[in-house]
Length: 150
Figure 1: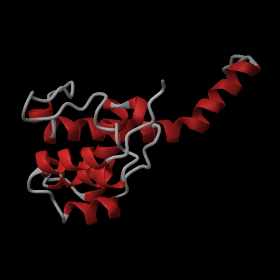
Figure 2 (figure 1 turned 180 degrees about the vertical axis):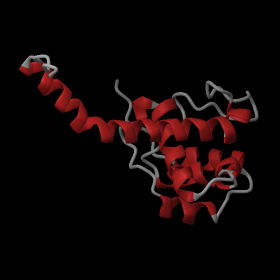
Figure 3 (figure 1 turned 45 degrees about the vertical axis):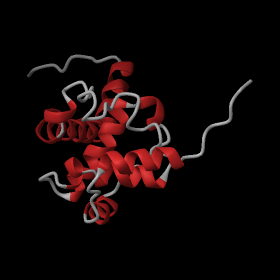
Protein backbone atom coordinates (compact mmCIF):
# COMPACT_ATOMS: atom_id res chain seq x y z
CA UNK A 1 0.00 0.00 0.00
CA UNK A 2 1.31 3.42 -0.97
CA UNK A 3 1.76 5.94 1.78
CA UNK A 4 0.41 9.39 1.16
CA UNK A 5 3.14 12.00 1.69
CA UNK A 6 2.62 14.31 4.61
CA UNK A 7 1.83 17.83 3.39
CA UNK A 8 2.40 20.74 5.75
CA UNK A 9 -0.84 22.35 6.94
CA UNK A 10 0.11 25.75 5.46
CA UNK A 11 0.53 24.21 2.01
CA UNK A 12 -2.86 22.54 2.32
CA UNK A 13 -4.49 25.83 3.28
CA UNK A 14 -2.82 27.68 0.40
CA UNK A 15 -3.93 25.02 -2.07
CA UNK A 16 -7.47 25.11 -0.68
CA UNK A 17 -7.48 28.89 -1.02
CA UNK A 18 -6.33 28.67 -4.62
CA UNK A 19 -9.02 26.14 -5.39
CA UNK A 20 -11.61 28.33 -3.69
CA UNK A 21 -10.66 31.41 -5.77
CA UNK A 22 -9.84 29.35 -8.82
CA UNK A 23 -13.20 29.57 -10.62
CA UNK A 24 -13.38 33.37 -10.20
CA UNK A 25 -9.79 33.79 -11.33
CA UNK A 26 -10.36 31.44 -14.26
CA UNK A 27 -13.51 33.34 -15.25
CA UNK A 28 -11.64 36.67 -15.08
CA UNK A 29 -8.80 35.26 -17.20
CA UNK A 30 -11.29 34.01 -19.80
CA UNK A 31 -13.06 37.39 -19.87
CA UNK A 32 -9.68 39.08 -20.40
CA UNK A 33 -8.73 36.62 -23.14
CA UNK A 34 -12.01 37.07 -25.03
CA UNK A 35 -11.88 40.87 -24.78
CA UNK A 36 -8.27 40.95 -25.97
CA UNK A 37 -9.16 38.71 -28.91
CA UNK A 38 -12.14 40.92 -29.83
CA UNK A 39 -9.87 43.98 -29.63
CA UNK A 40 -7.41 42.31 -32.02
CA UNK A 41 -10.17 41.34 -34.45
CA UNK A 42 -12.37 44.45 -34.35
CA UNK A 43 -10.33 47.43 -33.10
CA UNK A 44 -6.61 46.92 -33.58
CA UNK A 45 -6.73 47.50 -37.34
CA UNK A 46 -7.39 51.20 -36.75
CA UNK A 47 -6.37 51.82 -33.12
CA UNK A 48 -3.17 49.72 -33.44
CA UNK A 49 -2.05 47.00 -31.03
CA UNK A 50 -0.88 49.55 -28.46
CA UNK A 51 -3.98 51.74 -28.84
CA UNK A 52 -1.97 54.64 -30.28
CA UNK A 53 -4.40 55.20 -33.16
CA UNK A 54 -3.52 57.17 -36.28
CA UNK A 55 -2.77 60.86 -35.82
CA UNK A 56 -5.49 63.03 -37.26
CA UNK A 57 -7.91 60.20 -38.05
CA UNK A 58 -8.12 57.59 -35.28
CA UNK A 59 -7.91 58.85 -31.69
CA UNK A 60 -5.43 57.26 -29.30
CA UNK A 61 -6.81 55.16 -26.46
CA UNK A 62 -4.09 55.23 -23.77
CA UNK A 63 -4.83 57.89 -21.17
CA UNK A 64 -7.73 59.21 -23.25
CA UNK A 65 -10.54 56.67 -23.62
CA UNK A 66 -11.62 56.91 -19.98
CA UNK A 67 -10.72 60.56 -19.37
CA UNK A 68 -14.37 61.66 -19.46
CA UNK A 69 -16.01 58.36 -18.43
CA UNK A 70 -17.90 60.25 -15.69
CA UNK A 71 -19.90 62.00 -18.45
CA UNK A 72 -23.00 60.08 -19.59
CA UNK A 73 -22.61 61.56 -23.10
CA UNK A 74 -18.99 60.40 -23.36
CA UNK A 75 -19.86 56.97 -22.03
CA UNK A 76 -22.60 56.63 -24.66
CA UNK A 77 -20.33 58.01 -27.40
CA UNK A 78 -17.71 55.30 -26.84
CA UNK A 79 -20.26 52.64 -27.78
CA UNK A 80 -21.90 54.69 -30.54
CA UNK A 81 -18.79 55.36 -32.65
CA UNK A 82 -19.04 53.38 -35.90
CA UNK A 83 -16.23 50.95 -35.11
CA UNK A 84 -17.88 49.90 -31.85
CA UNK A 85 -21.55 50.13 -32.78
CA UNK A 86 -21.05 48.20 -36.02
CA UNK A 87 -18.64 45.57 -34.71
CA UNK A 88 -19.74 42.10 -35.70
CA UNK A 89 -20.03 40.86 -32.12
CA UNK A 90 -23.05 40.56 -29.86
CA UNK A 91 -23.98 43.08 -27.16
CA UNK A 92 -22.46 41.04 -24.34
CA UNK A 93 -19.13 40.76 -26.16
CA UNK A 94 -19.14 44.48 -26.96
CA UNK A 95 -19.85 45.36 -23.32
CA UNK A 96 -16.98 43.10 -22.24
CA UNK A 97 -14.73 44.69 -24.88
CA UNK A 98 -15.60 48.27 -23.89
CA UNK A 99 -14.91 47.52 -20.22
CA UNK A 100 -11.57 45.95 -21.17
CA UNK A 101 -10.59 48.86 -23.42
CA UNK A 102 -11.16 51.46 -20.70
CA UNK A 103 -9.45 49.37 -18.01
CA UNK A 104 -6.55 48.32 -20.23
CA UNK A 105 -5.77 51.59 -21.98
CA UNK A 106 -6.74 54.08 -19.28
CA UNK A 107 -6.40 52.41 -15.87
CA UNK A 108 -6.09 55.72 -14.00
CA UNK A 109 -9.54 56.80 -15.17
CA UNK A 110 -11.01 53.28 -15.18
CA UNK A 111 -11.52 53.41 -11.43
CA UNK A 112 -14.57 55.60 -12.17
CA UNK A 113 -15.95 53.18 -14.76
CA UNK A 114 -19.39 51.81 -14.09
CA UNK A 115 -19.11 48.59 -16.14
CA UNK A 116 -21.01 48.52 -19.39
CA UNK A 117 -23.77 45.93 -19.54
CA UNK A 118 -25.14 44.12 -22.59
CA UNK A 119 -28.60 45.75 -22.44
CA UNK A 120 -27.09 49.24 -22.28
CA UNK A 121 -24.73 48.49 -25.17
CA UNK A 122 -27.60 47.05 -27.23
CA UNK A 123 -29.63 50.22 -26.78
CA UNK A 124 -26.70 52.52 -27.58
CA UNK A 125 -25.42 50.74 -30.65
CA UNK A 126 -28.83 51.11 -32.31
CA UNK A 127 -28.16 54.89 -32.23
CA UNK A 128 -24.71 55.19 -33.85
CA UNK A 129 -23.07 58.56 -34.40
CA UNK A 130 -22.45 59.39 -38.05
CA UNK A 131 -19.81 62.06 -37.51
CA UNK A 132 -17.73 60.88 -34.56
CA UNK A 133 -15.13 63.67 -34.82
CA UNK A 134 -17.78 66.39 -34.60
CA UNK A 135 -19.68 64.65 -31.80
CA UNK A 136 -16.45 64.06 -29.86
CA UNK A 137 -15.51 67.75 -30.19
CA UNK A 138 -18.95 68.85 -28.98
CA UNK A 139 -18.99 66.48 -26.00
CA UNK A 140 -15.53 67.51 -24.85
CA UNK A 141 -16.32 71.24 -25.31
CA UNK A 142 -19.50 70.89 -23.22
CA UNK A 143 -17.86 69.07 -20.32
CA UNK A 144 -17.39 71.05 -17.11
CA UNK A 145 -13.75 71.95 -16.56
CA UNK A 146 -12.07 70.78 -13.37
CA UNK A 147 -11.23 73.59 -10.90
CA UNK A 148 -7.80 75.13 -11.31
CA UNK A 149 -5.39 74.83 -8.40
CA UNK A 150 -3.56 78.13 -8.01
